[in-house]
Length: 355
Ligand code: GLY
View 1 (spheres, rainbow, N blue to C red):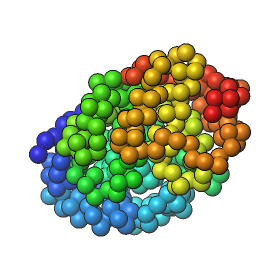
View 2 (spheres, protein in one colour; view 1 turned 90 degrees about the horizontal axis):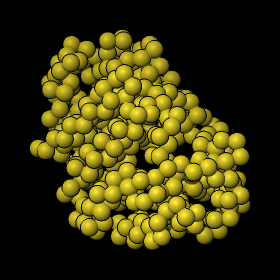
View 3 (cartoon, helix red, strand yellow; view 1 turned 90 degrees about the vertical axis):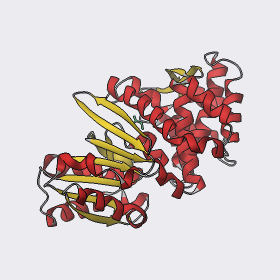
View 4 (cartoon, rainbow, N blue to C red; view 1 turned 135 degrees about the vertical axis):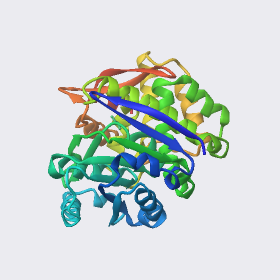
């Protein structure tokens, strides 16, 4: 079983990200520091059915008194009502600050469970076991935890680093093609912003089928890149914003189309094509980069075009409300080459003109 270990240093904390195929059924030793403690494993109904028993068995092998808390699947679960459900379940299980909360699932479960772990008793031990590609390469690393407010996504949140991240690349075999694609969009993003060799490797492999046997190495490389950003900027005040390449338009598209119509990673693909075009028009991104990114995304069956019928005015107005807006400008990540980028302040008018 290949295991790759990445150490993710964040501010004062360091934690290990273990990546391997079959890790979910062979991770008992990773839980040995928690022997004699209780653990609440939080999953949605799908991941509970697929992976719940395997993970509970590993925890019990490590002498951890583990039980499963199951929530409904879907983005609507990432809300304050679910937080109260989790706090009740933790109290029913008499979880103390010595005990452990484990998130088993994708970004919804990871973000929600992390926020519950951060706030319950002012913080309990927290482990992430991400099961989607998007959560394995992005949301499980870096400590952003949150729930949605009726007025917006992720409005209630914190930075709370996990103590351990366990990634079993075999879980990807059970994902549907769209979910895999959404994760691949973020993988390609890492190549675009920070690793030309990764971009060119994915380009050379040329298809999902050819990439698949190399997934655990690719996930490890993405985690390394993310860990570097988190180390430099744990609280997202500076360079970490580069992770938002393609996100200015992506957030506006998700908002305009209704959350869930486009998966986040799909919206990021369209946003990356647009942002590389903006960069070329500004003379910052080398000519031909947009075509190269578009060709790569198309080879991996990923969307590249803004869906028809969306007004540029409405998208630009939504972009002006982006979290990265500062006064009249929006800090937009622009490539200076494949594998390098910087933030460029652009006005909503400039973005509208380029859309
Ligand atoms: N998902 C972007 C970040 O963690 O900063």
